[in-house]
Structure formats: C-alpha cells, structure tokens
Length: 116
Length: 113
Image (cartoon, rainbow over all chains, first blue to last red; front, side, top):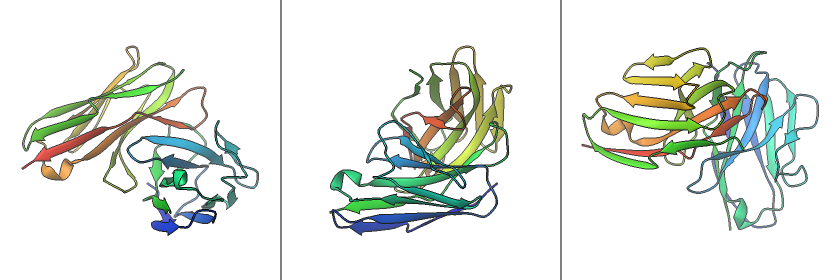
C-alpha cells in the first residue's frame, strides 16, 4: 500500500486569499486525484492530476479556481484561489498505482479548510 | 447517470451486534468497488477492494460482497465495537470513467458501549 501525506492538515484563511495544499506519496503512483468534501457531504472529484501536463477537470471545476501541479509521479499540489466561505471543505488527495484500473486507491488525511 | 447509493444514511447499534451496510450502483459495468472508513474530519482509510471478477473479500471482522448483476455490495461487520464508529463509504470505478472513483453518500455508524 502507499502512504499519502498532505500538508497542511487544516487552515483558516481570509476570503480573497489563496491556499496551496501539498500531497506527497511515498512511492510512484500512476494516477493522482483531488477531491472535495463539503460539510456533511460525500466526496466529489475536482480533477485528475496528470504528470507533466495540465490537469483534467470535472464539470463544475476550472483551472483558474483550482490550479493543480504534478511535477513528478510522487507529488502534486492543489491551490484554492480567491477563496470564499463556500470553499470551506475538506480537500483530499488520492493515488492509485500501476497501469491497470483494478488497483486500490489510497487517500491522504485531508486538509480541512475554513474560509472566514 | 451513474450513481452510487448507500442505505441507511445513519445507523446506531449496541456493541456486539453484527451489522450490514448496503451499497447499490446503477451500472453493472464496473472495474472494482472499494469500501472506506472515514473518522470525523479525517481522510479515508481503505478497508476492502473487490475486483469486478470477485464475489467477496474479507479482512478481520469485515466481509464485503459484490453482486454486479444486481448492482449491489454489502459490508458486513461482525461483533461491532465502539471503535467501529465512523462513516463508511463505498466507491465504484466505472469501466468508462478512467480511474475516477464515484462515491456513495456514506453510512454514519455509531456503536454504543
């Protein structure tokens, strides 16, 4: 299994500012994903982080608001830009290894973001 | 639309009971199904992964079954303990959806001592 570390684990931010969340995996993984979990809700995929190229965003999420980097196979960042209170959520990084889809997905411990 | 549904949304049981959590999905063309546990305000811990060709997986007191034809999975927890209190999420990878996980809404479990 893979161990995924996220930083920061939590933050309280002022509206209008930006926060960058880091995700580090202890082994190379093929796929990395960023999810959002709004209060009391389940997880929604924001985007797939592609190594060396632009992320693939899901409907309702755009690069200007959630820029993502993935410079190598073990690291990715998600930035939440120009934050508003509606961005208050838990943000989770996930990785899945190997070249096939029948692989187990692992998650970081999440970043709890509160925007005031 | 491909959806994952979990019933019940919340469950409270006394310690020691055996219990079943349900997960249903609308499209049987899945690659795999995974069960997770989430403690309040925390990330997800993987419990069990069932490949599309498998019928069940077991880990300790946990047993997960998969019936693709009926679009259902169950997570069986034997001899529940207060430490099992958490939210349990099931997630599916559809064949046509890359490696993206689609999550159910979760079942919030409370095991009372």
